[in-house]
Length: 150
Image (cartoon, rainbow, N blue to C red; front, side):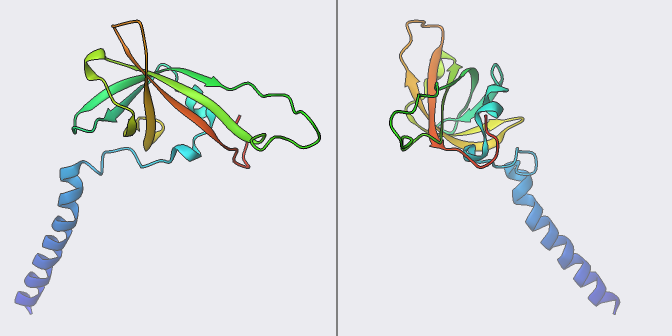
């Protein structure tokens, strides 16, 4: 009996270690939870202006972008009897700034933020006359959620 117990205990320990090892090696236990930018309303983004986001570049390197602006598109007046197709859409843009030597292309990147979590976001580089910074935009034009997203 003693041998079977040792065997089972040894197997249990090995099984637990094999499950936990990949999580620790990738840092998965210490990363922010995955999030969906679809669940993040404008007010949540606007509250993070001047905060830093870690972005995983396509070459595997990580760079930091700072959210410098969150701008809501002005509501347009309704013309005619029916509201426009996108009348109930949430429309806003986010402007990020980064280091000029770490330029990112137009693409979808993994973003990580201490409060908002991890998510994929499509950004577009912006032309800037200032050589000290690289700027990027993310544009949102999506149906509003039933919750209060203002």
